[in-house]
Length: 294
Image (cartoon, rainbow, N blue to C red; front, side, top):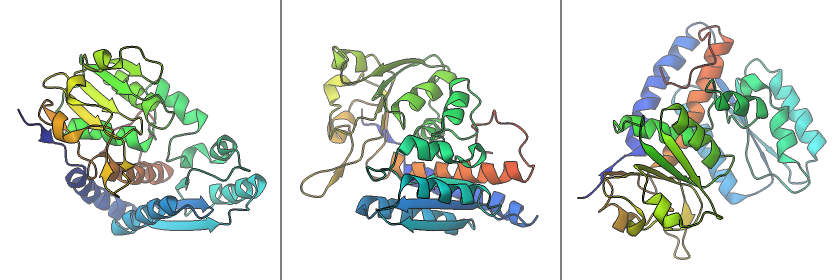
């Protein structure tokens, strides 16, 4: 058996076409969804991510602003800048690119973003709403992974899902989204005993640890669905995931590739969250209990 691919590029294109229709609807009533991305310092990888986000916005007719601040920016200066964005009616979503320089407390900065514009979904208020299943802005990467499962027609309810990784950005919110979808969820991490044995029990396996090819074929139950969140660059420059793709694809029923899997979906769900923020501000959406695309 060779696994079927869950193509993140294809799904992203389909969703962004739908988003364009919704953007046009907003623009017809005088509202252009706007995303402001703030980057502090000169991290090359962060610059690439920011540029890709801006291009994605513009491609569907959204307004985007990139604010590049000096690496010497203080925490107070950054928070003051965010406060100005909070009150700017042309901006519906604010994203501060992480990591931030050492002199800045990332948590303080994230909490400074207005809840209605926290399209990354990292502030405590939005995390709390995610816990109770009423998040308007689910964190983008796990939200994208859930959409990929939906796209593949994978029935999550009643399945045993194993999430490898417990980060606040992916692992924990991924577990919560799977739980709300009806899965029985196990979260594994660096202290987990018999990791291979536990992962082998998973009907759905989500790898999000940042270790190249850590999940091997002997760790995967035949027919499991494997979502690879990892993006790792090898010494030769090649990009690989946390899953040993070439061997695991012969065991799994569905698998996401790297690149071209979860990566494109992360930006797509950022667009989704920003669009929902704009629709909510315009009075089109009346509920926060909405993690669907529609």
